[in-house]
Image 1: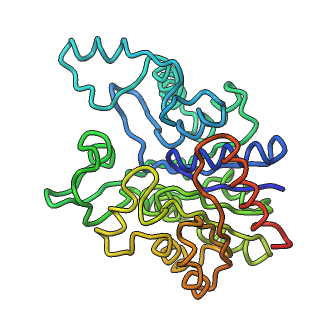
Image 2: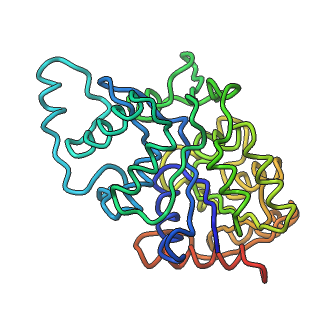
Length: 315
């Protein structure tokens, strides 16, 4: 069963790890958000890609990002030199960014670099950037526009978000690898990632929504998982962003966003939100109610199996 998963952030990485464990080697392709990418200290950094990559390699740190057993000597030395260190990079993590930056400077495409990293880390799945072009997510607050990492890390998501834009999206396009993944997929999964700034940029890349529509037209099922449980985001600011942008900060609010672009066939939500199921069904979606909190590896695999069952031909 060849599965394409759209993901970004820790929640998306956790489900991707469950899917990888539940599928045969090589059957999972994860298309990751690159709108969060940035350059710091002259290094090309891809936070969502690396979170998924480290998780699938089994080497992620205890918080779900970065690397396990990390040290911080370089950041300490930079701080002593008076350099801003609000975006923390661990010593081992810096090796990834050095590898990526050097290969990009040689002219390799971001997709080629990502696949090279996956091979080097022994990951059986493909991790594909949503596009090879530069796209940068920006958010508008009451004090003006901010680059996403300024809002997310430096300001710790404190300002209310009034608008979101994906700078450079008009020049982006789906890569041949992304198109091929959709054209050979047996199922599409939308991970429990932030629907606005993790999944939103992926869907905004010209060509991707069309590929999903074509896959669904030939009978491929698309299943989304809510990252909002009981009106709260399990990680990050998705609930606050939904509310400040005029949406309902619930699983129903997420389902409505995806239904508006005819993205899904089925929607997976937590048992806590079961009362919302009839309203979600009224959007034309099959509803799967299950435990969606992924506190450990067993829970990740269990949710992945529920998602794959909903994506299967007998669903």
